[in-house]
Image (cartoon, rainbow, N blue to C red; front, side):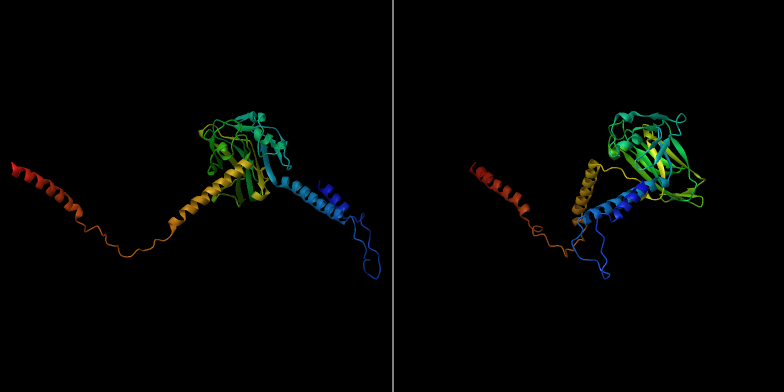
Length: 308
């Protein structure tokens, strides 16, 4: 593919469609402009884009140090990453292809197989991954909920080397919904016999143990996983999901509105000075009212008694 891009670039650069400049006193003879100059420029731009695409696609797999298709067979994705057959087949847990009957959103059609198969276990299980070189790495964990149709049905943790919980209470349905691809990215580094991940450090013996920890809700699982040497920018991104983007925008708007409503409450209180006397504090009219009522009742009663 790289060679093809270079050939396109070479053919675009060849001035076969434009008339050559004529010599004359060291200056180019002025005349009508080349009618096909715009076509040449377009072809050159396309060739550069093709070459860049080909170079990027061929360089990506070189950074992958380990990749497996859990519960499935060998698969090479659209980026050229080769996911090997599940090494735990017939050893630990169960393989499932229940998701094969469903389309997986956010994934390329050619790569949906990576999210349609999975390995799960009724107890905690994991993979031992050899890491031979020092450097910065990204662990890519691929998931899709293809069975449960609501949250709080399958919740589990992901742990590294028996002590670093890098993903806590993962609820795939709550994250992205049903039959939708979801990738968890975990960055870590290996230097001088030490594993550093999420601010924690532990001794590293050349192998990374990735465990899927049994929780209170159903069984832990994984669809596929790989380790890329580099940064998060080197990891291929999933396709956009309009529903998820809208949900994130709504959450951001709600947070903004709540912040706007709370803002006046955070203003400094203005001191009011001495308290104003209450004009009704010294009013005795409430005390005189029952006396007047009693006096009004006593006079007629006295008058009636005198007539008797």
